[in-house]
Image 1 (tube, helix red, strand yellow):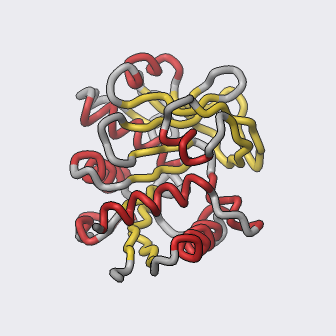
Image 2: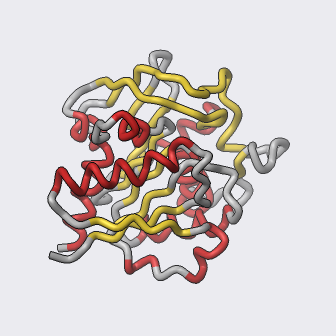
Length: 232
């Protein structure tokens, strides 16, 4: 049986909790599926050299600002355009939205406020209250891939982030194929997914953190299952 190869888009730093959790989450998924799995870290400044078609799925991991934002956006675009299973968590969620704004909506001036705080079209902006080492209840929209993965309509998930979707651009960004998949108690967007794609899900929360206490994150399992389908 062919080993699954998952490209981890991000600049690895074991000082980041999520970066310690991700290998463990993939290990738990491999045990659960009985499929050999290799998670390969892809440093962002070298994405131009990476052969992305060699990977059965791409996971854009937390840890922004990335060393090469453009490289990250091109890798996300590759997954979107080529029906490659994609998971984005935290910074991956933010950059999936930024990629959609620039390459689908054609907003060439779309920016991330962490990199360009004064940009007039900062589609990613500071959260009203930073979510640092925080647990939050999220509502999973019925019929979404996210709700299917969890087998529920709500979940408790952990965060470490200070930026999210700028509500000024929510309607324009999510009225097409990119749909809201989860919200917080006040209705703020916490996850999106792409209609018509085999698996393209991005969450502001970090489901991988559950692996540090020995739990297989349902979303990671769903992503790995999608990667298995892609491998066939």
